[in-house]
Image 1 (cartoon, rainbow, N blue to C red):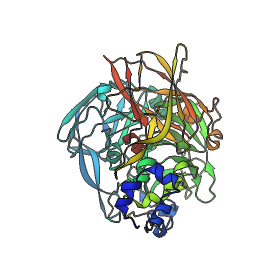
Image 2 (image 1 turned 90 degrees about the vertical axis):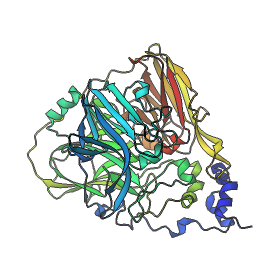
Image 3 (image 1 turned 30 degrees about the vertical axis):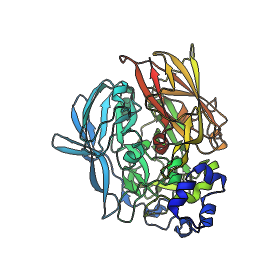
Image 4 (image 1 turned 45 degrees about the vertical axis):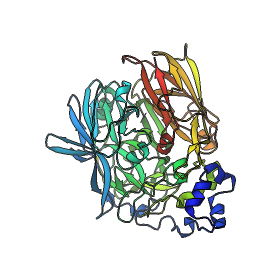
Length: 558
C-alpha cells in the first residue's frame, strides 16, 4: 500500500519509531516517496554560501548612533520598546520581513538597539507588544527579580504593555536580550527579536583605555546567527520533525544581520564580543589566514558574565547557542592586503543516535532555501577581515583584567540533573513524539523541579546521559562557575588544559555551559540576592527548539 505524506506522519510521526526502523529514507522508499536529498545542490554552489570566502563582500553592519543595532545609552532614561514587524534589506535588492524591537527616542529610531549601561544604573523600559501573539523580554544573564526576567508565566499579550524597571547589579559584561514566551521563543528569536545588552564597569573602561579601544570601531559586538532565506529574501522558519527535535539549522550565516560580511581593519588590537545568537548551531571559532590556512593566536579575555582574571591564549574556541566570549585579536604583525577569516572549523557535533532522521529534512518544509545548508559541525566562514591600514600601535595587553574569587564550596549541597530523551507528548502530526527531558521530566508551568534556600551555595551537576547531541544549559537569575568537567569527548579534552577538565572559557562567571554527550559538568552557584519574597527562575537548554519542546524547569529560591 502506498501511503501519502500526511498518513505517514499520522502513523509514523514518532522520531523513536523512525530511528528504530533505520531512518526515514527507508520508510519513504517503502511508501513510494522520494526524499529531498537527491535534488539538493552541492554545498558552496550559491553566491551566499558561507563555505566560500570569495562570497564575503558585503560591509559588516556596525553599531551607530541610531538605526539597526544603534547604540542606546539607557542609563536612567525611561523609554518605550515595541515589538513589531519591519522590513530590512538583508539580501541585496530584497526586503526581508523581520520581527524587531523598535525604540524611538529624541528624534532617533533604533531597530534592535544595543542597550548600554554601567553597573549601578537604573534601567526603565516599557514594552508594548504589537505582535499578534504573546511575547516577553528575557534579559539574558542579568541578576534580576524574577518579575523582571521575562518568565513565560507572565506573558505580554498582543496589544498589552509591561514595564521593566531595575537597578543593574551585574559586573561589566556582554549580555543580550530576546523573547521568552511559552513555546514561541524559537520562532520569535529566529525572526529577529534579539540584540546586545552591554554593561560597563571600572575594569572594562580601564581595559579599553589602556588598549585605546572605542566601542563600535575597535571594540565590536558581533552576533552570529544562521538563517534560511528563500529566493525572495524572506526568512523561513518551518521546522520539520528533525528540526523540532535536533534544533533548527539555517543555510546562511549572518553577523549583525549581515550575510557574507567583511570588515576593513588596521594593524592594531581589536576587542571582539562574540555572541552565538543561533537557535541551535554551535561554532568552533578560529581566525585563519586566507592564503595559508594558518590559525592566528588570540587572547580570551571574557565570557558570559564579564572579564576573566587575565588573558588566556587560544587559537580556537567552542561557542554554543546563548554563550558569549570576548577576545583580543592582535593584527600588528600583518601587512596591508592580508586577509583573515573568522571561521568555524569542522568538528563532530555528536548527533549520533538520531542520524537515522537525516532524511527528514525534506519533511515539514525548510522552504525554498537560497543557499544549500552546511550541517552543524561543518566548516564555514563567518567574517572576512581585510587589512586596509598600517598604523603605529604600541599598546600592551595588561596581564591583570579583573578579580575572580573562586567559588566557596563550604556548606554547599549538591543537586544532580540528568539530560535524557524519551517518548511523551504529542507530535504536530499526531501520535507520540520524542522529547528531551531533565530528570525524566518535561516542563510544566506550575511545577518546580527543586527549591533552594536564599544565600546558600550549591553545586549543580549536569550529566548528559544521551549520545544524541550536546546541550547548552542556561540558568536564569544567577551566574555560576564551572568547577569540573568529567568524561569529556576528545575534541574538548584537547582544549581542557586548566585543571579539572576545564576550558579557558570555563574560568570566569557564566550563565550558559555546553554539556557534551556522556559528559558531566559541575557548577558552583551562590543563590544570594536582594529581592523580596520567593523567586521563581528557569533552567533550560538554549537550543531554542529544545526549550520550546519542554527541556526546561522551574526552580524556586525561598
